[in-house]
Image (cartoon, rainbow, N blue to C red; front, top):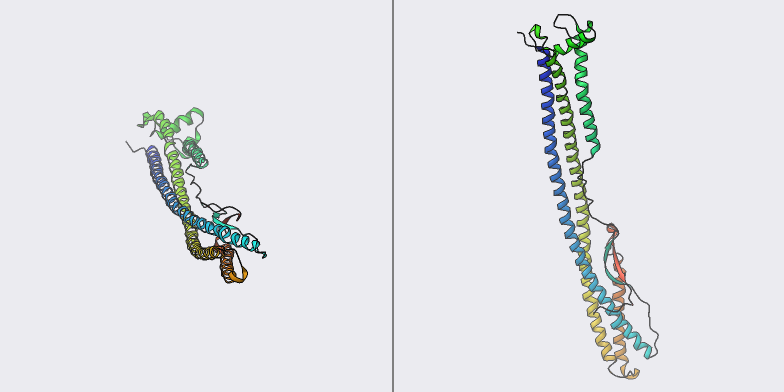
Length: 328
């Protein structure tokens, strides 16, 4: 018996399409897992780096809070005290206030938006619809081709047949011919036609899965680039914050020494009832030292407006009213 070409070719083509679809789907599944793992890795990297940044912010805030306490101490222990003394001796005193630096804040948040791990259903719906369409169309296309160019078991062209005869001849063709001619008959041919829908359907589903896997990998790479950019910005921020810490510590130390010198001079000045003819040198020294404290404070306040730099406009100082009492 001769090899039935039509059913063999149909089986081979359907199997090849189905196998290709399965391989493509497997590749897509692997890409999905890789993309998911990479996204989690990128998110974890950013979360760890952001936690380090928040710790740097806390250290900068602590240093600025300490400096703010020192500035309030300068107001209450030096400026207000010399002002009271000058009032007692009828000398006009400068009484304007100044803001007390107390910490840093950011005008925009730097948290990473959560990666969208939800699968976009629209490509899957389209893929499913395409698979269904491919599965439906394949038997129709094969049947139409067989009726156009096929030959019945009797040797007559199927295109010349009509009605049930054409249907029977077509089904028999895909069954390797009629039973009378040594084939498997129209029943097997009809099943062969139905089975021909499986391969293309699997192929379309596999291609859809592979395509979505590639898109997920691309999304993971996009997230990597976003994380790298955000980490670069955090690095720049932290450089500024470390500079702020050093600046705050330096100002705190300098102003603290000036406050100690001024309060010592005020203690000596107020140790006795003031007599200008006797105590004027003490008054000059106290006034010079308290003026030094005031100038150091004003310089610190002026510098706080520029210390963060132009490239960190999202970083800003916070202030307290200088009328608040010093922390205990």
